[in-house]
Image 1 (cartoon, rainbow, N blue to C red):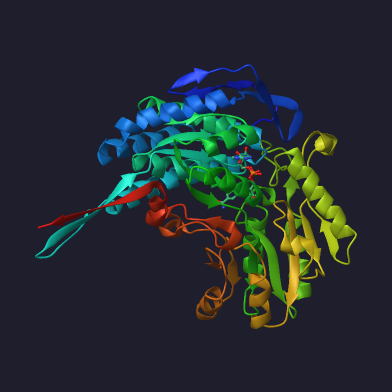
Image 2: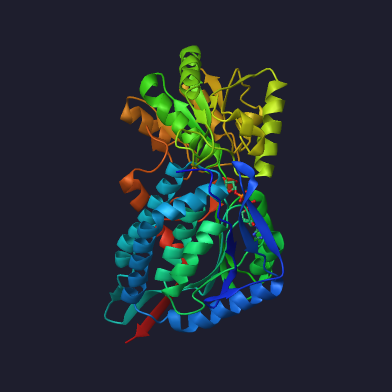
Length: 485
Ligand code: NAD
């Protein structure tokens, strides 16, 4: 896969299955080659938001009455489409997002799995719930909600889009999707094809940032906002949603602790811990963001993790030699670099490692060498913030009670992980962690986990859950009917 060829794609809004051009287009640049424009994206005005919501509302009146089989047939088509288009789509995703080509392919595979899991879970989800005694009959039915606003971030746009689109439409809702301005192209191209499998208006796509998002939040015909992104924007959304008392579903940031126990096999777990922390150059909501290491293992752990990280080859996402890619955008780049400077000015020690594949292009992209930080104060910013970049802090601890308290001393509560050779001990500690998910000896869902685990966080990491049969609940209303005999 070459980083040289650049084809500039133009993306329009999609309203009622029509391409809608606007007077304002924003460029998308390649995060690994800032001189390359890879796309131009039509920006919506508030009028476009209104048109998109009205189209979705009109489509809802018939889509809500379609059969489950009809809706499932659309999911099968999306699954096929994603598999068919994976190669070209992955190149677009890498170009706009900066991530490695293999990571983009993996993301598309996860999007496929999101659809397959939805198909599997939805059948039992709609089993009728009927109770009856001598006096009466009760049916608890599940109905679609109406127009859903799906707002997504840039970091894993395809899978995060499909985790909303599949459950929303299979439960009979219609959608207005708003991708992030920092990676709008791949999802828009796919959603346009997905929309063509559906009656006009079932899926609409608008582009823009806060103004467009806010118009969507406030629209009275939007019945629910399903948002994945940062906590600050979630607070604006909640305020906007209050006026029309609409429901919100939030998948937000995390500051996931990894607790290494003293019985863990360090050589085995270091690649897994680093693999989680530095997936997408650290830009994953449930990446490991802080590692707690027993004081007796601290020095050897530090030495071995540095050895591992130093093997990374940092380059363009489409460069086959690269194993580590740039970060996505300027805000990200600036905030991570400033954080690195502040750490360097503290008592902690930070080393940046890995080989620069094309040093001559280093300043023409958002390249940051991965960093390991030792001798960190547990209350230091790099431990308490969501760094969302390639910096991994190692915190030393003395005993289980102390490490559990440190892990829970945060407003975040998305994922977490325990690393041990003793499952019972890992489980006992896992049960004390304040998080939506705890992984033992892994930092992501297994196959079964992806299908059956509700994904989401506690405290300020989210409201509600995505994935599994529990995630489907976000997209329905209950309607209870009671017949008095
Ligand atoms: P962000 O919150 O800045 O933006 C997310 C989306 O919100 C974008 O589409 C943006 O245009 C839109 N937006 C901005 N202002 C808005 C407003 N007033 N109303 C409505 N929408 C508005 O997040 P980001 O920088 O794109 O993504 C990074 C964050 O997302 C991190 O905190 C990360 O942890 C989180 N995230 C969470 C999950 C999860 O599943 N829990 C997954 C991925 C990313």
